[in-house]
Image (cartoon, rainbow, N blue to C red; front, side, top):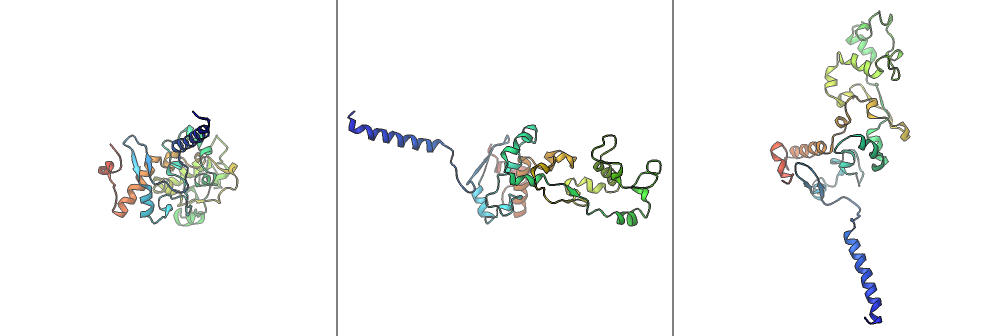
Length: 246
């Protein structure tokens, strides 16, 4: 090869390698994806994401319910995972954006909606023992927290003791699950420091996957309910393979 062609060969080789690397490397892009591939044992689903954005008039929050006006909301699978297990508990702090933490780890809840006087006068008809213990346990009715705390293992925690007593009359609220909590509880102001975040089990007695739907449950509930409400798109048990590829 003549030496005068050597620079041309070298430059051509560099350009070829750069082009090949660009082709093989994952594409980084701003904005929402055109399509999303959902892996599933029942058959893969190709979600036409761009079409849904167009159908919803660009209102991301219609589907990405926790994001408000965020123009670049997180993927559904960021919060709704296939399985809430120890691996998720260990890894989600690294993979999730910190702005999402307070969506689940709120500061706690008050019982501002519980009216003690209303219960004593209107429901118990002045008989404090309807809710409080009999005289052999507490000679005079006192605050539940005087004996029940969240740190004494010899007695039921304050949460468990109050819930057990309340459930005697309000079984309907407890059957509602998490939605029934708002009948008595209100969320406190969000925590100001990450150290203030608490584990779900500190307040909630049901498993995490009942508080936060898994990926499959979230997609099924969100997609099918929207399709049914709008009378467009597949929904129902006989429409699986309109989305899932056999």
